[in-house]
Length: 324
Image (cartoon, rainbow, N blue to C red; front, side):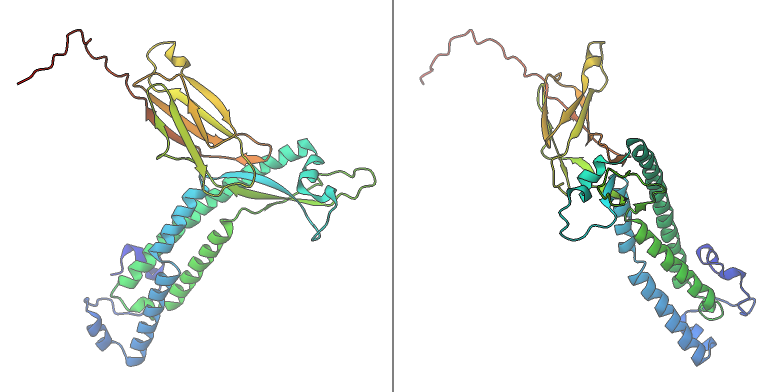
């Protein structure tokens, strides 16, 4: 009998033409039951499936895709404003992205930001579903490969090939969708300005790598904490960040004020006037910007300040030198 994973391929629904009852045999017994030509087809197709699972759907490859997916879920997503057609070396300042952005209707751009947010959420959802589909397909095909039953590779091979094609298409869709796409613009966002010829523009979704605390360099002291953070791919221009902190488990109304939001234009900051021997939660993210459409994640870090040093007893006695 085929396993439940193999049955998930739909092979159990086919009339494979095998005997109703056949005891389990090892590979040598199967070879004796099959004609030489059938045995040759069985081994070739089995090797083809093994090669597919080794090269195109290996556990290592799926693990890399899972890691990439986790990274995408932590990225921030922005809209880039680019001219639709920009000639190489064109020095016209009106076609530069920074200049074109200034000419966009603010209300229309805000509407496109909502479209970008929805498109990003849908894209991440589809990526997760495709990755789950690839994981499930890997388990199904691996179970088929490990099964001692030769009949799916013979009478049911057409269905197996169709399943492999579906898995390959799902992998192609996953790889394509990992790159944010272009936003469809129904109407012009830039109006004609005088006699100047304003080019058509295109809006493209782009990702920025997540902001992460440097956990080796971040540390809390008695009444202050030094926080450091980084971005794996450093931006070309200086970015603005938003650092939040709050005291965990405040005990008095006054201690509830031990929190705040600090704008920072660097990758390090010292938070002062903290309470000794207490736990604080720190959160870092990019500051809000005009092009931000989606930022589902932010890094957080909990540190405990050091206790006050114990005061030793007063040394009122006289130290005497003892000579033996």
